[in-house]
Each structure stands twice: as C-alpha cells, then as structure tokens.
Image (cartoon, rainbow, N blue to C red; front, side, top):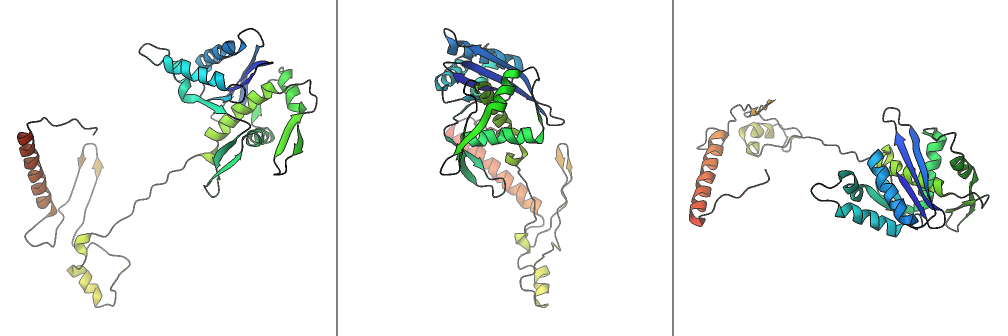
Length: 294
C-alpha cells in the first residue's frame, strides 16, 4: 500500500499486488479521500479499512505532509494491541514505513555489498521507471487520472550534483496518485527485489583432531620431509554420525591418552561429576533449578 497525503488535494491510496508465479505487479485498487472537513482523520480511517481488506505486507506512507498521520496510525495500532483487539489494525505498527522523499535513504550496493546514501525521490522514481520499462506492471485502462499523471511527469532540470529534479509539464494535472503508486513500487523494490535480498551461505569444514597432533601417525610423516602436511588423516580414530529422529549413532573413538580407553569413558565420567556438583550446589543453596530457554 502506498499513501500520499496532501492537505489541499486529499489523501491518495494505492494498493499494488504481485503475482508470485510470474512476478507481475498489478494495481488492484486506487482511491481518493477528497478534501473535506476532517480529511486527515478520514484518510487515516480509510488506511485502516483498506489494511483490513487487503492485508498488505507493507504500508509506505509519505512522511513530508503526513508525518502527523503516520504517528496517529502508529499510535492507533499500538493502543489496540491488547487481548481481544483487532489483529489487522495492531500489525500496522510493524508494517508502516514513513518514506521522506526529500531526504536520503541508505541502500546496499548489490555488487560490493556496501551501504551508501542516495536521494530518496530519484531512487523511488527510477524504481518505477525500471518496472515500467521491463513491462512487469499493469494499470487499469479506465484509470484516466493515473494515465494523465504518468504522461505529465517530466524532468525539469538537473541539480549541480547531477540529481534530477522532477516536475509537471501541465501544472493543472497533479501527481498525487502517481506519488502513491511510486511509494507502493518502492516498497516492492526494497523488500522483494532480488538485488537487495539477503543471501546467507553456510559452509562446513573439517578441523584437525587435537589428539592426533604429535601422534604416531603424524610422526611417520616426518621422515618423508612433511613437517606440516596439508592434509591430515585420522588414522586411528573415526567418527560416524547418522542423523535419525531422536538418536545419534556413535562408533567407538579410540584415544592415545594413557589411562583412557575411549572418549566415551571420559565424557561419561565428566557428565557424572557435573551432575554430582550440580546436586551438591542445589543442596547447599537450597534452591530449585531455574527454567531455561532450551
């Protein structure tokens, strides 16, 4: 959902949906809360109603003229977070994002994965341009207001820092619905675009068994001139883990330590000592064991 607030024009609200199979975006609803008495309160209530109807993933709201309305939405959602309250309204505080077009936003470079600041409005407009050029967004042919605003939106000039300054070719044709659409598009661009998705890769490697350092299997390599072999094999020990529901099968792990036959023997003794220590500690302190998060 994209929301554009304006005291003279009213509140423009746009709902943008995505087909998760082919990735196409479709404008499913667009409406205007016209300028009238208590316009801002009526716009806030309309946002709450549409949120309950469509259950959007995010609500991107203009923070320039609507900072007070954004605070009112957040407060309404926070106050209703109680037992028996409306869940749809309560989640607004989690999905509401105040977007200030006159400021800068922090995005990550998709190549170098470094954070950088970019002007918020050109970033938002470029995201819309890219989606229209790729042909992945559809609008209703009967929405003549939005079509006129799209055709009327131009670049007036460039700033000394080469930042485009946008304006209207015909001042009588406004751009408030287009701004609401751009806010909905930038929400998809920042939260669902593959350029900005977080990829977490986990690699698993093998570590050298500390018991094998200096063992007979390694000393046999010293005569061959390999004081630091690149690949060390566990000659006299092996560990086989087969993951099954509720159990782990372990083979006997032999050890070179004098006085110990297997690692299991040492481990079991340490566990027994730990249990005995815990029992004695509880008896001394006369307290019950505390609940943990495990």
